[in-house]
Image (cartoon, helix red, strand yellow):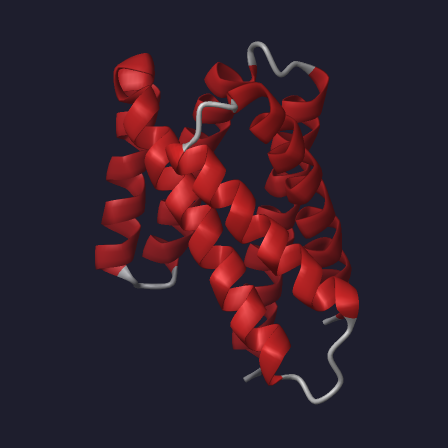
Length: 156
């Protein structure tokens, strides 16, 4: 049980750090952010795929690796699809976080606000044309999410 918790904590730590890095990139250089974010997203999927393969989740690992390699190799040819998928994944993450927050006995404002904001950003990223503004908002959300995840991972 402790070993499983340690693996989960390590994975959470890596993903939190990557969220923070992506968020900073989105804030610092929004003009180049999509290109940089796509490269980082490709690397994140590859790292995630490798971690899944190490955990013996072959199917999940292969899918993540294929997505990561496709993002890196095809780049801008898949930009629209990547933004759509990334937006949908961010919205799903927000929905999951919102459901978890609503199941808590004590509901705090930020525990509900950030998931709702994450859902909105995900939807706008997937279907909106306000890319620059969305990237900045997405960057802020990723930094906040990464910091909170980092704190949670370090507490375990």
